[in-house]
Image: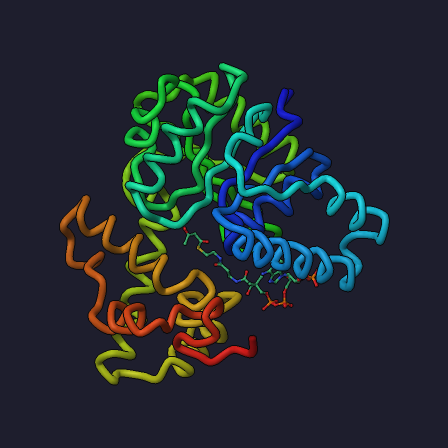
Length: 287
Ligand SMILES: CC(=O)CC(=O)SCCNC(=O)CCNC(=O)[C@H](O)C(C)(C)COP(=O)(O)OP(=O)(O)OC[C@H]1O[C@@H](n2cnc3c(N)ncnc32)[C@H](O)[C@@H]1OP(=O)(O)O
């Protein structure tokens, strides 16, 4: 059984918002922390839009919708996470930022056996753990986008993680959030991205080389292989900046050409074509 009741979520971008929503819809008390008021308001709007969508499609009742939103508190102060049983960090994929956050969290979170988790998809959990005085309590909880829809959570155990923390993190995600967990190694890409990213990068290279259009690649994979969405739409959903960060991390770790980010991915990211979240990636999106 899980002993987690009070959850903190750091970062309310694509992933943080989804994770906070999943936790609130599972009956947990959730404090969401963002860096400033504007980011907080944007994150809140993201959560409310997604919960509204679940309500409109009949997935949840009006009562469940209202109760879930009522369980969320928004703050810009990290100290408001002091009484949390579990914190999931879902800030941008910047190692220095995350290391600094874990060092601060270590000072702030009062319960010494609280679980300090990261949703990182590319930064070693052991590196984050070492920024704290309780490395055994640090674990990866890697959700998939959109978090309210995708059933999987990778639980990433570092060489410093106490196996009891892994077991508690799994119980939390399996029993409390109703997800299915797999235990993944603390190496870049874990399990899913190690397989998925070379495929996505291959699709970008195909478009870059003029081998096929984005539309044709996507139609090929949705209708030919029954994938729910084609690889270029999926790049746009993940965010091209996030995909670039993951590819760079995989390439740095393994030095294999399959992980090398194609120049087109870099140029698009530099130009601010980040996919759905910026309104333009391989496709254009309505705001
Ligand atoms: C990069 C990493 O580190 C890890 C990753 O995240 S890798 C990315 C993993 N994700 C994927 O591979 C996504 C693959 N795609 C899909 O699963 C689906 O295409 C999709 C769920 C995104 C959209 O599904 P769809 O059938 O095309 O669209 P749609 O009918 O609008 O949505 C299906 C359901 O998902 C829900 N949904 C879609 N997008 C959502 C979102 N952003 N937030 C919340 N719910 C969402 C909808 O409400 C809908 O629910 P109902 O069936 O109850 O109505």
